[in-house]
Length: 320
Image (cartoon, rainbow, N blue to C red; front, side, top):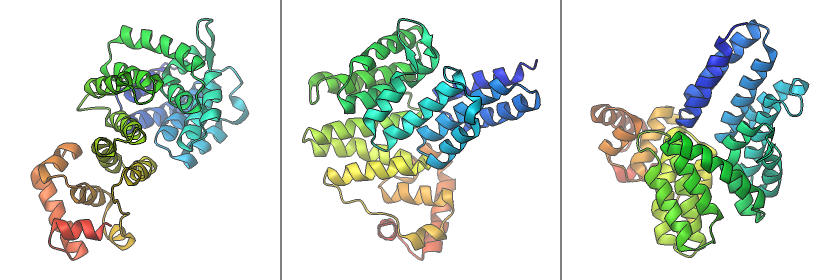
């Protein structure tokens, strides 16, 4: 039996926890190909389930549902592929605001303390369970799962996992309390600055939403702007749109890009243009996109030429 599919599964999970979602998806795709070639159908199902989760986390509904449909009846209830598919569908419920459905689905992956079900999958899904339960108001199951997650995060000493733990505690703290704010601040301090930018942006979004709902729109806008900037940079369009909605609710006038301008630019040029239009300097854009300042300068000149404009002010106007 080939061990390569299993090795690729472990690598994909590691990449997921490092915030390298694209790399994790590539590992899963390769693992799926090798597992199918070796006739390892159960392992192939795990890779399909992981691909569904990765798509759901990025709010790519079509890709997620496609992977779940491909699993079909091969994912028997109680199996790891089935649990991964349920995790993915629970994340889509969360994305779409079906919080009760998300909490119910995610809480059934395992029973903390008994060892029944797919405990590892439940542990990995706990941040999504807590977020859904915090919205739904039924937090008992989420607190039980979080206790297990906290033990795991503490034993691994991973800054990202500890950041997610702090975020979960912030969501379960009394709304508007100093406790919630302290946990959110701790989460942002723990999030690695050079990795896992997606989860950091999710924390910024949730913190900004909490501050806005507590009638602190000015404080909320700082977090929401950073979240939106990162989502735009990563091409996470659904999350960027949700953050835009929060910004508008916080009193910020945020437009949508002009469609003609969008059609004239490549994907990379559009991300650079949106960051610049949002107020980032060329050096800040270069840092976020892991490019040189000279490369950003070159792209910006091409952007100006394609859109027939001459300044950052005109660029902001062109992108709405």
